Length: 633
Image (cartoon, rainbow, N blue to C red):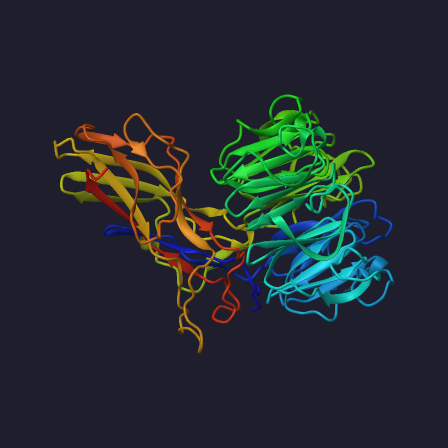
C-alpha cells in the first residue's frame, strides 16, 4: 500500500508531571481511501475561462484537483502527481513536486514557462528542465524565482526583473550570481527582495514609487543590490495599491516605505517615505496587506490595523486610521487574511474563524450580503487551518475556500461560473462542504501508540510537597503540528492547555508558594529498527516549548505572562502567591488560558527526516516538568 511521501510532521507530547506521566498518542496518517485536501490555491490557464480564477486543491497524497473549466465539481488534473504545492500568476500555473521538480503551463510571454521558448502551452503541464532539488518557488507576474535546497536562487522571465544583468528576457532557469544562503524571496513583478541567512537584504527591479527603499522615488537595479536599511528581516510585503511596502524583523519590529496615500504606511501622516521607517508597533508575529489596509498579528495574539477608512478596518467605523490601532473585538489570533477586495478573515489559535468587511456575494459566510464593520465569528466553520480566495473584478464578488485541519473543504461566496465546486452556479452566503474532500482517517503508526490506559487527553495530576498540594488539570494534548506553516518567530498549535491550577496551603506559615516549569529539548523518537547507518536522532531546530498566557494577574495570586523558552535548563516560575496569602485553596481563574506551545526560533520552515522516516511523519517527544515550592518569590 502506497503511503504519502511527506505527510505532516507529528509531535509526540509526553508530559511528565512529577511522578505522574500523561502521554498524548503518536499518530500518523494511514493510506487514503478518500480524498483529503492539503492546501488550496488558484489555477490559471488562459483558456475560455481565463477571466475567472479557478480554485486548486492539492491532496495529501499529492494529487491536484481544480474547479471550473467547464466542470461544476472538482476535477483531477491527470498529468500531475506527487505535488507539494501549486503556484500561479495572472496567466500561468506552476506545480512544485515533492522531489523538487517544477512543472509549468500557460503563457510563454517573456519565457515565463522556463522551457527555452516563448510559446504558449494551454492546459498541459511540462517539466521545467535545467533545475532540480527546488525547495520553494515564488511566482510573480513577470518573473519566476526558485530556491534550491542548498539555498541558491534561480530565475527566469522578463528582463530587468529577474536579477540578471542585460536587456534580454531569460527563458530557462538561470542561477543569479553573487547570492548565497538565500532564505526567502518576495516579488510583485516590478521589484524583488531577497533575505539571506546572514541577515542581509538585497533588492532589484524598476520602481517609480520608492519601492526599492533606496532613498529616492525613482530607481532601477538590474542586479541584486544590498538594502542597508533592512537587516534580520523575516518577511517583506509588497503592496500593489497604493504601492506601499512593509517588512517585519525577526525581533518583531515593523518597517514601511513607499507611497503613503490614505496614511497606509502607518506613520501617522500621508507623506511618502523612500527609506524603511519604523512603525510604532512591536512584538509583531505577522503582517498582511489588503487593497488599502494593513493588518498585524502580535506574538500575544492581538490584532492591529491601519489605512483607508472603510468597513475592512474592523474598527466599527469608516474613519481613516494612520497609525496602528488595536482591533479590540479580536484576541488569540493566529492569522489575518485580507482578500483582493474588502473582505477580511481572521483565524484564531483554536482554529475558529471571524470575518468582516465587504460582502457583495455573501463571502463573509453569515447568511446575508450585508457588510460588517466589526469582526463576527462564522459559527459553521471550526478547526480551520487556512483560507484562500479568488476575486472577480468585473462584478465585485469573491469566492472563499476554507481548509480544515483534517482535510475537509468549505466554500462560500461568488459561484457564477461554478468555481466553488458545489455542482451548480448558485452563490452561497454560508459555508458549504465540498463532498469530494473528507476528513483524513488517522490510525496509530510508527512508533507504536500507548495503550488506552496510558492515553489521557484530559490529564490531571497532583504534587504534594512539605504541606503544599498542587492540582493541575490539562486538556487538548495535541501530538500533531505542521512546521511547514510556522513562520520564524511564530507559534505552532498548542501542545496542551492548563485548564485549572489549584494550590492548597496546609503549612499555616503564610510564606507564599511558587510553581515552576521546565522542559527537555524536543527530540526525534528512534525508529523501531534503530537509526539507519550514518544517521542519528536529530534535535528539533524549529523551536522550543514556551508557556503563553494573556493573564497578567488575578485577585488571588500572580501569574507570569508570555514566558520564553521552557527548555533553557532553568525552571521558570509561572504562578505564585505572595507572603500573607494565607492557608487554604488558591485557584487559577476560570478563564485561565495557559498554553504550552512550540515556538519557531529559527529560519527553518520544514523539518522532516526522509532517511529514517521516508513514508511516515517524523515523530518527536518532549517532557514538561512541574515543581512546587514554598516561598521563593
